[in-house]
Amino acid sequence: MQSNTETFKILSTENDTYFPVIDVRQAPEASLRATNYNYEMIGSKKLNAMGLFGNSIKIGIVDSGCIQGVYRYKNFTAERDTDLNGHGSHVTSILLDIAAAATYYMAKAMDVTGGGTKKQVIEAIRWLRAERVNLVNCSFGFNKGVDVLDLLALIRECEAEGMIFVCAAGNDGGTPLFPSLESNVFCVGAVDKDMVVTDFSNKGLEVDLVAPGKDILGLSLKGFVLMSGTSQATPHVTGMLALFMEKSGLRDFLQVYSFITQNSVMDLGVRGADGSYGHGLIQPTFGGVPVVEPKK
Image (cartoon, rainbow, N blue to C red; front, side, top):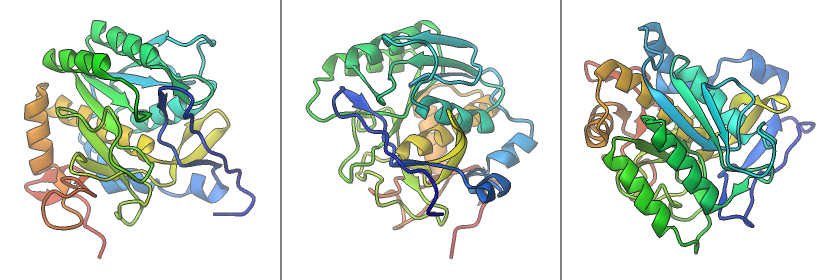
């Protein structure tokens, strides 16, 4: 990266939750002109060209708010409604680049510090449950040691009602964070432009899928910035699931999970599912042939 780019961290360990983000940098002009490698890698533009944009799919986002327009917006923090952190805006911009026609519900549960409380997350998910969203993007993780049994019970109730949770594995070099480590959610790790799992991406048998998460271009408070983290990988999966659900009509987690992990992945790493790449890189396949060839 250029030496004059701004670099800082978004990480809060004082709250119950934090954003799995490595760094944020102002995007150099070359990045703004270049093709976004991430969308080419997952094949989302090919699905858009087929007329798939997430119509009829309702997506909930638990984050720091956003500066882009969404259908519904509810604030569960003590600060004003807008995004004061930038993380939620970046996540939302990735989703909009993949599934522009989905209906979005922003639940602001994290504040300017990049953290939030368990109570705020619970209230956010309860609201999304009442709105009957299909997918919930969770680009956050809980600090280890926080008692999450009541939140886990709520998530399981929501899952039983048809909500699908897509969760960031985390970036602390260890095992996946809650809620990504739970069963019946999509646990998402991150790969770079060469389809290699990043050093920061948490690893373990809980990982289900990987998606681009290194130097992802998106809209934030200072215009277009590059962010890295499993936070950025997660909305790639959420958006792709929205396109798949639009095309297939499937809404049940087990049906969606089974089809995606068996038919809509590029196997990376060792053959079969593994603790670094899960089942592989999410992307559509046409007649069993992936739309993007693996790197040699």
